[in-house]
Image (cartoon, rainbow, N blue to C red; front, side, top):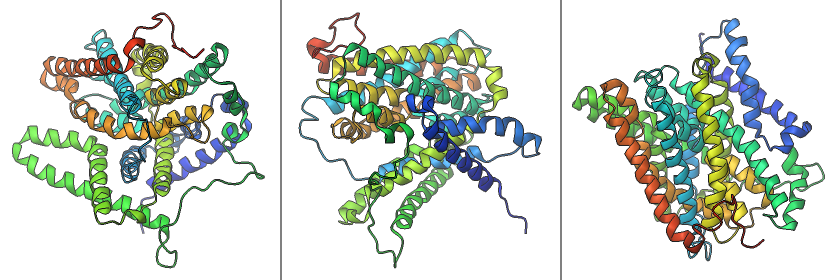
Length: 471
C-alpha cells in the first residue's frame, strides 16, 4: 500500500541530528564554552542535507514546515496548561514581574521599529514587512517567524518563511555567543558574586549529560496508574485534545468569516498563521475549567514541561533545517545588515535597561532577558542556569509570572503584525505606518514603566553599560 513516509523521514533525520549534536556537545569544548543548544547544532547539521543532499536524491518536497507549525502550537499549549506559578513573596512589591514583562516588550517594540526603518532603505526591492522578521526571529522565535512568514508568502513575500527562520538562526547565535561574552565581561567587571564563578565549571551543564556517578534529577511525576493509562500518554492526550479544539475553533471562525468575502477569507488565512495565540488561549481556558472542577491534581506541570521541551527541540532543529539557502543568498545583504545592527542593539540595551530597572538579581535577570530577546525561553534559561543552576533565585519564577502578562499585552502587537504586508497587496504605505505607530506606542508604554520602576536609577551612570551599585 502507498503510505506517506515524508513526515516520518523528516522526524527521523531530526532525531539523528539531535543525537549526534548531543554527542558533539559532550566532546567539543567550543560548544560547551558557549553553551550552544543541541537543537541549534542539529539544525545546522541538517542545513546542507536538506539544501543539497536530499534534493539530489529526488527528495525535493519535505514536511519540515508542517512539523514546525504544529510543534509551535503544541509547545504553547503544553506550557499554557501548566498551573499558575506560586506567588513569590516580594516579587510583585519591587516590580520585578512587571519589569521583566516591560523589558520583553521593549525587545519587541525596539526591534520592530529598527526593522521597519531599515526596510525603508531597501524598498521596493524587498517586501514591506521584511524588517519585522527581526522581532519575529530574535524575540519571538523560529516557530512564530516561520508561521507568520508563511502567511506573508501568500501575500507576495517570496521566501518569507525562510527569511524569518534565518533571522531566528542568527538570533540564536547572538544568544549563545553574546550571552557568554556578557558572562565573561561580568567576571572581569565584578558584576557577579564570587560563589557564582564556581558554577561555570559544572560538568553537567557544560557537557549537557548527567555523569554516571551523579544522581539523576526527576523529570516528571505520574498522576495516573500505568495499568489504566500511562501518565505521559494521558498528558499528551490532553495537549492534543486542546490542539484539536483550536483547529475546530478556527474552522468555525473561518466559516463565518467566509461570508465577508475576499477580505474575510484573507483575515482567516492570517489567523491560521498565528494559531499559537488561539491555542494558548484555549489551553488557559481548559486549565481554568479543570481547576474549577478541582481536577488540577491530575495534570503534572513537569510532564507538560517535558512535552514543551520535546516540541521546542524538534521545532528549532526542524526550523533551521527548513532554511532555503537560495533565498538567503537572494537577501543576504539586508539580512546581514539588519541582524548585525539588531544584535549589537540588544547586546547593549538589555544590560543597560535591566541593571537599572531591577533592584535584586540584576545580572541574573539581565542574562535571562537577553536570552529570550535573542532566542527563546530555552536559551534564556540556559544562560540563567550558568549563574543559578538549581533555579533557586526567583528570577525564573518571576519570568513565568511575567509571561502571562506579556502574552496578554502582546496580543495587539501580534494580531496587527500583518499590516505592513498589506502595503504590498494594497499599494498603499498607510498600513505600514499604522503598525509603525503601534510599535512606537509599545515603546512609549515600556518607557513609562521604566521611569516608574527605575526611579532614581533611570539615568544613573548614562555611559556605563551595566549599572552595579553593589560593586
